[in-house]
Image 1: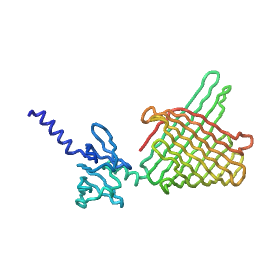
Image 2: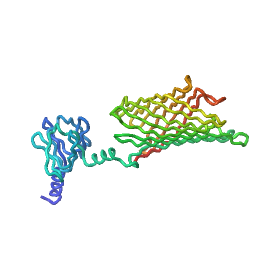
Image 3: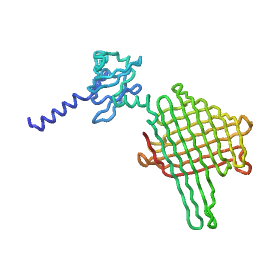
Image 4: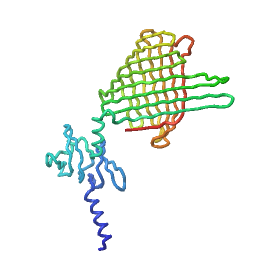
Length: 348
């Protein structure tokens, strides 16, 4: 036997020794690294076939030369190399020696990498898990007219299995030059922070604070703390649809010295939908009936679509509508803004 053939045989043997293997009830065997028990399916990563998902109830045995994290139905976590003995799983742990558990007692199986990611979501640092985007749109015209329009939006969110934090900001600035004089035509800023706490798999409580400034509404500041309950009506890989309701306090300060304080009810929905693998849609509507001045109300409506160009870059199109039934005297009820431009995404 030549040295080349001997080396190849040793390499193939090593692959067989260090790879994991699962055996099915029908006798089929799959070789690779065990990734996780995902709901009703066990996921295995094969060097040649990629990720393989098989029904957990059809698995007869598991063997792994690499440590796996086994979570039992009672919450106990065992870490070690796994093999099977009849209908039991045998885990060779470093701290407690060799332990066994019935297959029915196994709740979760994870590789060390999957377990580390799961732990990261359960007990993250405040600086971990942030993801978001920065939208930037700019347009200009020169010649018979001179105009400049700048729109900037930023959104960041940190979601764990227990709660989520969101921060958002939008700025719009537009000007026109007429007879050599620059005239401002739009100047508005909106922002806020919100916190959601999962009470049950589909029920959550929320608290938020929103701030708003709009020079052409004569609005120096709108300060709105709010809170209530929400329901995850749809929660799938492609669609997330939430319904929510609660109460808010609306403090408004106008440029002429007028100040208004109102108690409000709030009801609304939030939809995130993946139109395709690269295009997603986000819609949010909140309706605020006024309790202090019955018959008055306001609505916030936001709609955006983004198409991924690269992993970190997308093209976005956004529409925003703010309706106030009782605006500052002489001002219109609606402010509608359309913007388009690049979106830079980030994740930590």
